[in-house]
Amino acid sequence: MVRLMHWASPEERKSLGQARRKQVGRQAHGTFTPKARKTAPLALVERSMRGRVPALVKLKYALMAESPFGYFRGATAVMAADLAALPNTGIVAQICGDAHVRNLGAYAGPDGRLVFDINDFDETIRGPFEWDLKRMAASLVVAGRAAGHKDATAQDAVVKCMERYCAQMRLFAQMPTVEVARFQVHRVAAAAPVHDALRKAERATPPHTLAQLTEPAGASRRFKEQKPMLTRVTGRQAAAVLAALGPYQEMLEPERRHLLSLYRPVDVGFKVVGTGSVGLRDYCIYFEGNGAADPLFLQMKEEPAPAYAPYLPEAQPAHHNGQRVVEGQRAMQVQSDPFLGWTRMGGRDYLVRQLNDHKGSIEMTELSGSGLEAYAEVCGELLARGHARSGDPLMLTGYLGAGDGFAEALAKFGAVYADQTEKDWRELRKSGKAGTRE
Image (cartoon, rainbow, N blue to C red):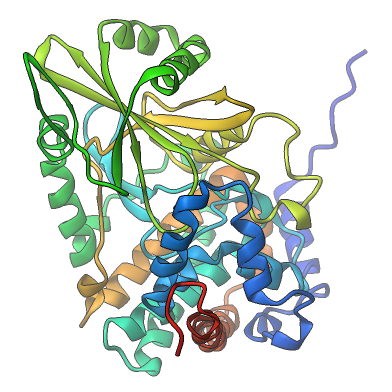
């Protein structure tokens, strides 16, 4: 006889969420105490550099030293430790793990239509849902300051983000479960920063990438040399990269495998990407299908264990980190890159996906004026959908309730953590690790 797990009624699930308020009150989310830190931030950043390409470590420090937001992007390990030191709700969902204003963007879905969603899952893991919201809250204040907003305006944007998150979660709690899983957010383009990102994505075609990243080489093309940001890979290393695509192809769906089989690899490059990922191994493979006018670019990106792994040992899978990222991405997104997959090379885990295929992100300057608040609401709605798809909207709604106390607490946290981020950034600049001292 098959024994089924206990099925909890909607009322039970909502009550379970309400009960978690005794564990962590909603207003308690507004606090952060730097004295609780067990390890200095710079030591955590230095630890996160282990295993990276040594020649690129200084570049990452330099990018982090450029601004408080640059530091924030590169110091996920610091915030992971800070969040783990705080009491948490224990209400678990798949979290992005690095939810900040520049980790949402536009890309092409499997049907070719442009989608705007969370699009960076390097740190994804199953963890307390509020960790995503706290990182987003802090990023809105840090980014808001960079865009010229006063703190009151930036905190208002956080409140709008969290109010939208709560309202959307209440809606999901009333919907059929299958409808939640396929819910599409249609109003995102109304926010000016999102509209601009979608317009950029329209132009980010494979031929556009071809012109940007490659140059003529006889009858064909090859990657440009733009050191240290882009370097051609040849010989044994290029052969190893192409060989690693074999296991990747095997795990693709048959129809995707067939499409890829119609392309031939032409050249391999090494590309420096982002801020948090600088120093990790990132390879680009340029393919041609029906001639030079039919390019395809795949990215093979190294995926180490997430920054949250030391604090969530039960959530960290024993298997492949590339697989962890793929599964986390599919859990939170309604539509994902059709060529999403994983492989392993040289004892390291890699994510495989398309490079720059109709991708577009926001710029900090686009968050000036009314852009910050409008964009914050989009962030709240998309995070709510991701958490509802991978968690329990009834339990989450039970915890969040109908008031605005949670949103206001997150706004306070965002401001306090933004202050701490600026202090940590100044410490980095004083340390000389980025090549300059203040």
